[in-house]
Image (cartoon, rainbow, N blue to C red):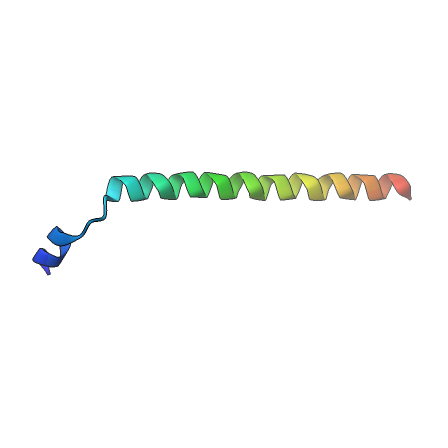
Length: 48
């Protein structure tokens, strides 16, 4: 309902900002895992 939306204490701008920050953190961590995997693969191939 309209009154329920008006009573909501959620700031959409803040929520979107937090979501973007969280998404960027996830992307950074994902990239770090990918790079670590590539480094380990290179190390294993050097050992052979």
